[in-house]
Image (cartoon, rainbow, N blue to C red; front, side, top):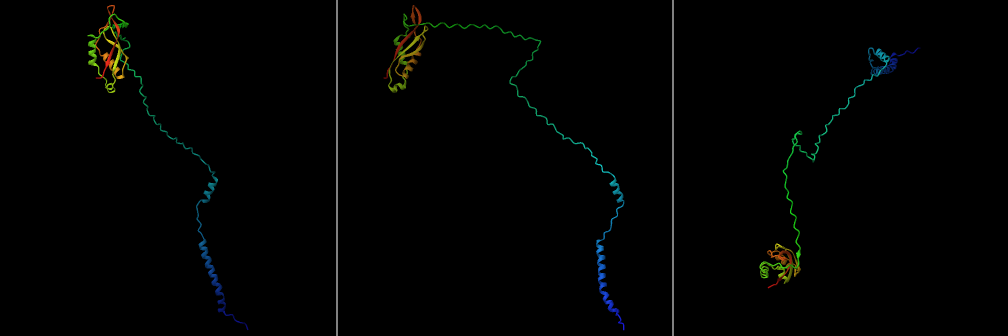
Length: 222
């Protein structure tokens, strides 16, 4: 007796593999849909590539003119020369005309030569005298002598001997102290002799001559 196959049992057995097969097909379709890219068709791409490969590349160099830098010249400052020390003033004088300046002659009188100094006679025939005599000279000295204050304070006193020369006109010169007392008293003795009026000159052979005179002047404290 042959066993009969149940068709429902066979369908149950094939159902599970068919499900897995469906899942596989669906997954494959989905995967292919994501990985598939639409090709981009570029017209004449092959011709362009062929043309470009056939044309040799040439490098054309273009010489561009170089711009030279513009240098601006700075003018040098003008330096004024210092004024020269020598200033020449030109007068408006015509070259053709000769200017002649006549100067009047100047009469220059020659200076008179000084007369040779007369010699001093040591021992004349007549001695030189003070006007009015010895008494008048004593009075003059008493009235004109100024006793130095320092000499008075120090108590200096004494007789001073003075020598001098009386010229032919009676003037007095070359006054010097032969013997003195102190610096202040000697200075005063010389001063008062120089202040004397002109003397009567000495005489020798009837003519006035230069002669030396010596007089004492007594300084006494009272």
